[in-house]
Length: 275
Image 1 (cartoon, rainbow, N blue to C red):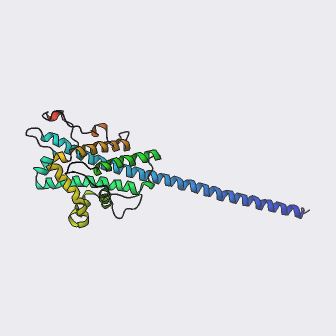
Image 2 (image 1 turned 90 degrees about the horizontal axis):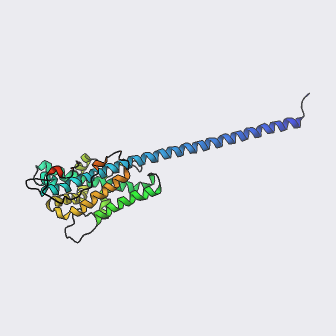
Image 3 (image 1 turned 60 degrees about the vertical axis):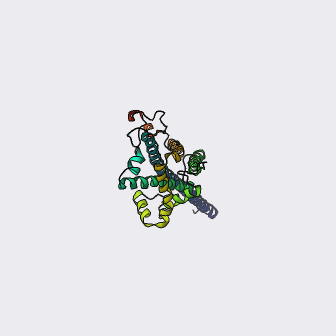
């Protein structure tokens, strides 16, 4: 005998309801899993941005502090009879090729660092150094270095004083034009040299850095204090970005300190870092 029509109708409705619930649950689970997957992708991308930017800023800071260490240590060497330090050996008394290299490469190291600082400033929303406290700390370290570059002294000659807005302008010019937020990068040394030779707007801004390098060779006392402070602050930044010393060991993070006896031999002088 056929079942009651009402019972069959109720059974069909129940099946429809169950099917609809399963479909809704399936769609919900798909949406949730999709959201979690997208979140994981965004986290991985953010970590990748952080790692790429952190390492680039770390290398730029290390290369710049290393050059500053060489310059400052060179001043100590210059005080010893018959000895010549870094700038005197290559910029003042070196060949034309050596002098041009020292001038241009030192200006590049300053400009490259400022370029990565500008990238950090512009793309901070893509970065996550672990938590907001760390983000604030890295920006505080960058601000301290910027303030040292911008600081005014009573001396009429202010070597390596770069106004804050000029720091940003130089940094902007160092960023590759085609790079996008989250994937920005600075131009390399070859492109820097080419732009110096061919682009008036670029060379005009970079001339300020070249003039500071010349001043550092001619009047060490005009730059010594600022460069020492900068070198120490760059080491602070490196220590923060690489706390476990995975990129640079402790022996490559020497803070320059003037020697009390300038007549001592090179064996007892601070170890020169290459840049």
